[in-house]
Image (cartoon, rainbow, N blue to C red):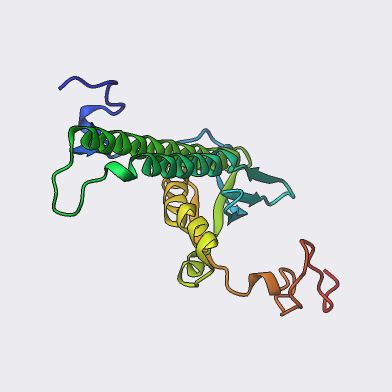
Length: 230
């Protein structure tokens, strides 16, 4: 088998190789043991420096650092890819609706060609979204390393997936891929020597971060505490 590019790991680090077929194309899924990054003295992540990470649909990651610094990762490219792929899929289905075989019938050659093109488009869409998610997580980890952040407190919003929110918003939640965002961020942070801790987000929008007492839920983007004048 001829590979499009060389395996980026030495042979002694490779633990398993799996042959996959996605969208009519063959891929090798390589699993390797990668060591945690080593830093010069005085440049390693400090466990005493903590940053908070909030996951969102519009912005995959919003980070607040220990020194008042922050980072906002745009998710415009991911959302545009989802919209364009959905529009393209609907257009393709409308165009071939009249030629679709009935249940139990064998499709024509043209129908099989359409199915092959649809699988190629679906695979290309998944790869683009996956690449954008990796780039977003890499941006967060690179910023954390530059700030010498040793611990990332990441809000876990997966509880919203169990709440019915209507047809359109349910689609947005499915396209959000919360578990995937958490996984790629955890993997890259671990390789960089940064600890990731998941935090339950229930009640955080109505709790004062200074005195930890319940406050009226803010209507806008500014939270004020009547107890400690935060």
